[in-house]
Image 1 (cartoon, rainbow, N blue to C red):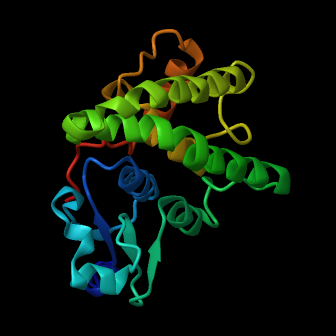
Image 2 (cartoon, rainbow, N blue to C red):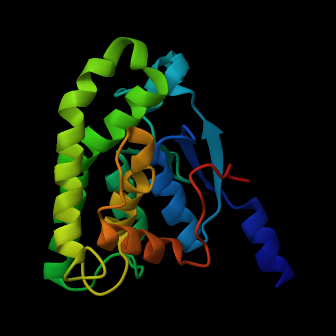
Length: 213
């Protein structure tokens, strides 16, 4: 056992480049926590241009977080791609072909319908009310439409793909649980709120504000 602990201590580990308030980064932190995987954490202040430095762009030319650097030095960007990579061979990636396709369906929904409204509204309210407040009038109904779709689905199923939590739930949870910060009222969505509680009911659940050790 002592030899194993020494191996773990010296073994190369992954490094996550991330911005703590980011829902996209939180997805990855949440799955890493659920899996009990160790990693190094490097904060990147995207508001102050940290993702646009020459050093960071050398790792990810797209200039976006999160970015996962694997123990062999290779890098992987895009939060949902990282979730897919980490979930392989675990309970968080569905087993059947249909449920796997369902998981991808909802992860695409999160990126193309949910996140562009709810996450962007949250960003504006936190950082850009002086320059982008006018956009909220268009974003708000789009966000509620996404929540309507979720409420309908969750009226018939407890999870988004199959009969247990998967990376599709993690992907959608990240910005839904802070939707009120974007100005969205979740009180008319009892099924969504019950689902949020189910996601949180995990022994390794962490908050978006928890700083990785």
